[in-house]
Image (tube, rainbow, N blue to C red; front, side, top):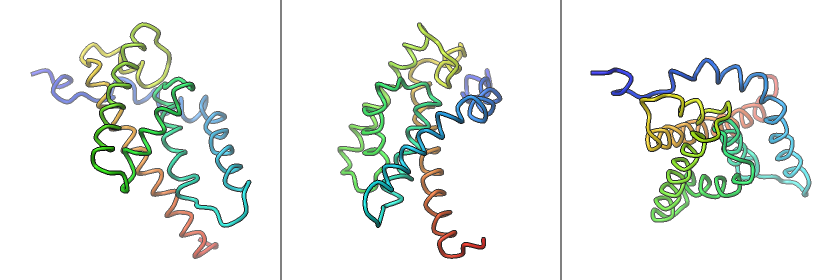
Length: 166
């Protein structure tokens, strides 16, 4: 049995990803963060850190890293919000999941024709992954990356507010 086929992963692209996010993407990620901080502080206090910052920012950064075109960020963000909200009705979550998987499958097909240096294009280079597998891996990155980052942003802020010396 081919171990790469039985346990598909991002092994072929992970070293490249660390360098991308650390260097090249830093200004664009900072721009996303600054934009949401500006929006959050543009209206009278209080602001909702979770709704206005911790939830939307991670999915937009993940869009950038996956290679989702900027014009599609709104589509992606709406479905991600529905998918990741514990307040969304089950049918809405299923529909958002299915639409995102279809979108990511189509994105993988587009990256086969016009590759870039983002995650989906790196995964497309692997001959052992089809577009459906790439879509599911991208969904895993979205969910795991979003939940971890959103939760840590909120919890870290709470810890700092409770004990500014920490």
